[in-house]
Image 1 (cartoon, protein in one colour):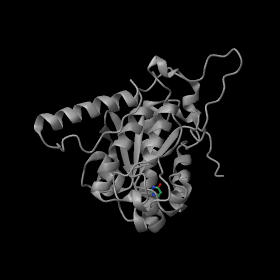
Image 2 (spheres, rainbow, N blue to C red; image 1 turned 90 degrees about the vertical axis):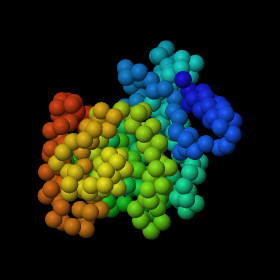
Image 3 (cartoon, rainbow, N blue to C red; image 1 turned 45 degrees about the horizontal axis):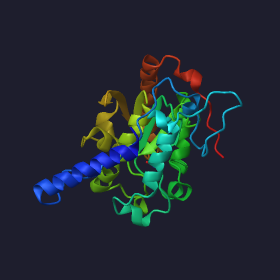
Image 4 (cartoon, protein in one colour; image 1 turned 180 degrees about the vertical axis):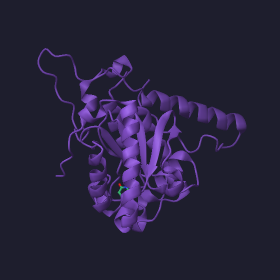
Length: 275
Ligand code: URA
């Protein structure tokens, strides 16, 4: 089913509920984010590409089409992610929309072994519309490379909120809540084998806990049957060198888990080269 069809059914049910109740019910808020039904797992080689790709490549003469036809009812992950990015681009669900320069949906492999979840865009990310491109991002790339993960091969990187909070403050709970369905949709479409939360904002919002990183690290949790690990945010490592050792322990443990889930994942690794 396409996202437009789902939206139509949702609008119909909401209107019906309002009319039966005689007032505007809040039980339909916040509105979910709809996305086209993801293609079956076996589909398209293109899903493994980085999604910096902006236009559909033409198939070689005589080759099978690269993307499923919409008429078949299933579209590629690339198209669904692009559609989601468009919805994020016009989002005005919270006040962060008023001060952003760009939305920062996420970047990386569309068939990721790992989804890294951060907090929210900072100054550079808001300027470039890409996550983790500032100093913390450079450290994150090194941390990932140490366990054979990269945004150019087997990892997708996203944040709890897709717009920069002013002065890089933590996102408020209502902002995280308003944005949560975008991350849920990303997880449903990308189907990562494991999730790495960096920092307490990511962990608290994804795992719905009040516990901080020091308490959460060292264990695995579940988000919709996907194992989730928690470690320190690279910005925290830049501030406190003492945290580097425990963060490295976390990464080693995470790598072992990945090898259990996906024994050959390291073969898919290609280093990320910054432009
Ligand atoms: N910190 C985050 O949590 N996310 C980013 O994208 C950049 C810095």
